Image 1 (spheres, helix red, strand yellow):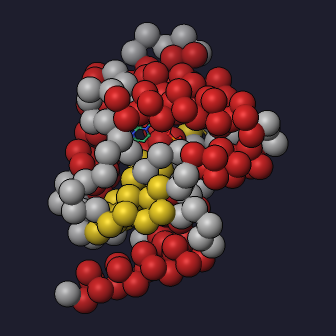
Image 2 (cartoon, rainbow, N blue to C red):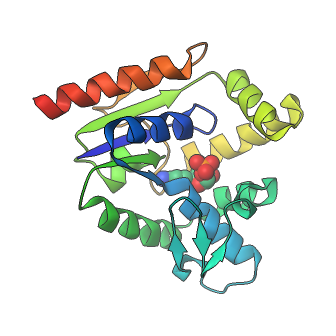
Length: 201
Ligand code: DC
């Protein structure tokens, strides 16, 4: 079974997806980390960064080296948003993601899981939160200025939503959850309930 959790940065996807996966005993897939690895490979000079070897788990490995922290810098965030708009990069990542998701129970987090990677996912959730709230969460996490985070976030959001290839949009059959002002536990509980009802249906 696949639970797809899509939505913009800062909506709470990672925290929620990890917690739901842990609660249900499913495997967590952070597809954003894959685009971040491609971005870092390119920043390091790779000619075909989409061909890099990527391994996700407790630690993120790029061509065998641990890049768990290195893929979270603002420079990589910016480049990831650019590489993620390129069709050859998307094709390569989507193919790898589909191969992983074809077997077992997963909670997969991203932008296009419910629409493109896994349109047959048994449960699709689209998480949102208002702009300022998302920027505030992110600024708190990385210790940055909220106005700067908000400005960068708007640029990357627009790129994600307006790109031609698999733009960020809720699937028609996704359940939208606005996490503004909601405690993460409440969101995790709600998705857990939805998953149980899909499983027992
Ligand atoms: O979720 P994140 O911030 O780690 O994602 C990094 C970048 O990758 C972000 O610009 C959006 C993009 N992305 C994407 O286009 N499709 C996905 N399935 C996941 C992430």
